[in-house]
Length: 269
Ligand code: ZN
Image (spheres, helix red, strand yellow):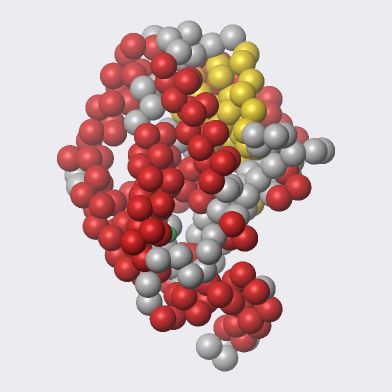
């Protein structure tokens, strides 16, 4: 399967619009162009009254391996990184959360880092049994993702359990934790995603848009928006620490980080 030029494709089926990440050879790793294309596709869908449900899918074996680290300058200035991550990730992620119609992430294989972030911004998450959810940032010297959704999705203590160990969350556990809403056999993911989208699309659209707004505002009133802002500031500070910069250099070179993880997993670190 080849990668499409924009690496984001839009598919329409009745009232359901799917935005498909299409860079399977790179496990749909996101770069600046892809994030911009995704943002545009989502904005167009939001402005199209005939679209009742937005589905985010991915081509190939994996949903998304995260941000393409090969496109990041490890010596990027702190202030440049702050502006880039705020515009590229933080604000766009919140726009996805605030889309005025229901959104569904349909996830298979790896759902990692920025890919995890995108899936967490969707209202419903349907996953194949082979999916896993993973925030690798703490292992790489990052203070979690740019938006810390885990405490809202799975509770503070369980968020600590996964973030403090760098463990992956398999799909079955993600269902129990409430991170995802539906779990299906891998071969049924497409069909089950379509069925779920059709059921939501058959609901009264204005009502759902108001319900979604109320549910999101409820989280905001509980402090989610302020909590995300304070986390983003610490996340950015975290990028500037000596530990974080050393690990980012290592991640780009590959070798030392692998050694670091092997030693860590053997209990040496
Ligand atoms: Zn960051």
